[in-house]
Image 1 (cartoon, rainbow, N blue to C red):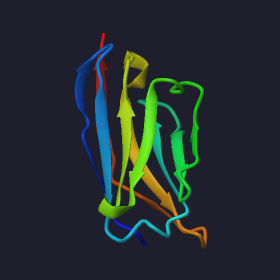
Image 2: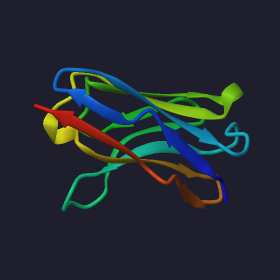
Image 3: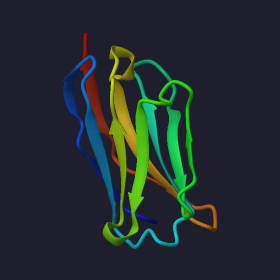
Amino acid sequence: QVQLVESGGGLVQAGGSLRLSCAASTTIFSINVMGWYRQAPGKRRESLASITSSHTTDYADSVKGRFTISRDNAKNTVYLQMNSLKPEDTGVYYCTTVTSEGARSWGQGTQVTVSS
């Protein structure tokens, strides 16, 4: 199992930006998919963005145009740049990876709070 550690969360005003990082305990070169999920208070965890080993990206409609996912294989890290943040973006953000064998790992989560 891949160990994942997220960082970069915090409190920001609406319209502001944050960049989340997720460091993996092993090389991510062979990890098939890396992604970010969010769990808002009282809601189910939802997928926000994903990036494949060939750097193909996909986004939820709610964040498209505002969030950008990227990965740096040399640093074993995936990022989520979040711009134009809204109060409804508040939640715990989780990093996840899926290997080519289909094994999924989760980070511990990082809190993002957007004030109005």
